[in-house]
Length: 111
Image 1: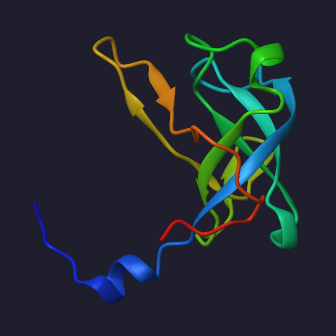
Image 2: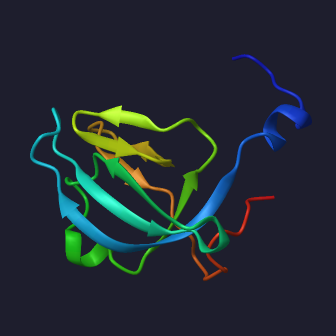
């Protein structure tokens, strides 16, 4: 594993955002949803996430998640992803979201 220094870590904009809407993403190669997330002062951003194994669309709405908001936008088929949804793979390779236990203002930076 490559070590990084504190200055490298500070460059990563890990921010809290609340999921506003969830849409099916049938064009994705692997099962995924499109997420519309409110990042407060940073605005509302869209991304996709391969999280259909653990979550329904209905239970995702209102959850606060952690996203990397300073990567370049990424074209996924006809869809433009504006941030990276964070998560971990479980023992079967299905993604479990990084979420917050308590509420913080949307757009809050991980420190």
